[in-house]
Length: 318
Ligand SMILES: [Zn+2]
Ligand SMILES: [Zn+2]
Image (cartoon, rainbow, N blue to C red; front, side, top):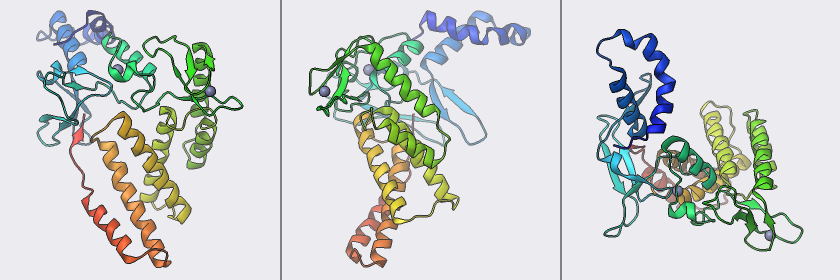
């Protein structure tokens, strides 16, 4: 079991007070043993999805704990909602001798945020093939628009494994220091933090971010996902009227998010399944409206209805 001493000390300090004040009274608990168990559990545990109202769980799966991390892993982990059995299955072809990998984090973030998170929690600087590639294997999750007068290129880190690396454009000679990039990202964070959680506010934020971030930047995808989920909730509550423009926007958002997720996290996951189900429903609704208006033929509508039947909920991914 992986158990980094430094990480263990950090985690332990957060519950040490509880031990000293309460648990020390219980003879079943010994400080060193509890510290060790807590360290192993925090470093190796996988989230377990419990029934609503039962809080969050952490499960120890000894074989699963042996699998190393990659930001573009080749397996997905499916947990049964009934008995919490964990099934690890390949999500791409794995060659003989190739390492089997999993992901310790949500892979939608950019390299510098993923690497920092992994270092803070597990004390290693990831150098996987996605981290080592400035384009993140074509995902461009950190891309910033070059925005010079004549260039529509994208700024990316020259050396993504050096967090202070300068960034350069993929089309011109523009080269920007990390400090300047960092201040642009701060600006993006401030824009996102201004969100009032309404669809109008989220649309305004997207408009502002799209002025200087590449449209597949992870912050844009996150705001789009929030907007999509929020509109789905509004629709369920009868607050969103499905006009043709609102249906077009939902389909546009859903497709854009799914396309980017295919690059950052190929294979199945619960968010992708939810978006896909809703996307099909919105496309069917749009087709129904178009059919009534005489814009499309019955066959087109039937094809979409068949697609809707095929989208079924599946197990929960870790
Ligand atoms: Zn990585
Ligand atoms: Zn450029």
